[in-house]
Image (cartoon, rainbow, N blue to C red):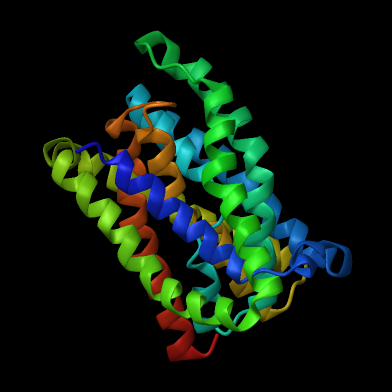
Length: 283
């Protein structure tokens, strides 16, 4: 069975769940608190892809892994980041807004960044990017479910709250299910390259955290905003990266999805350690 028939429904469900948590004003927080929102968005949408590109170059990753590294870095914030922000005593309203805004903005930035990356390293080995297909798939699996979720919350608030409580508990298991399916399918390739990719992905997450911390300190954001931005920059939507990589309409490559699979594992481990540190020290 083609794993895409599991990946795309899970991604769509996660985006619908995200929509259930959103209100129109969540997209307008940038007008009220522009500094915090802009620092978070710049970290996610600009700095993180640059770090990924630099790391993939420094580690001399093969073209398909190179593309996969940049792909996970230019995806929007993960749907679990709001929960992590709450556990870390962060600014949940800021987290929700950053996730919402990045999910919309990346509809345009992901095709642009991936077109550049594919042209730079992929075409020599026959990897090309059908930009129109990428745009269409992201609209169907991301924008439409988010809008449906917002609509359900607006008109049926109580029902939306009940549905969201169930779906929010499924987000992490669903992501681990995706990772598990791809591990089984590509276990030998993952095992053979885990040392290289694990180190590269871990470096990406740690550098993301360090850069986010430095940016929030330089811009004098408060502790709650700082924690939230660190989590948002360090937690990307691995399900979307896997969906783009494995889709028969786009890259049709399980190999390109492997960095996102490893990222999903390391992201949760590292950020759980970060949340645990905050719980233990209070800082």
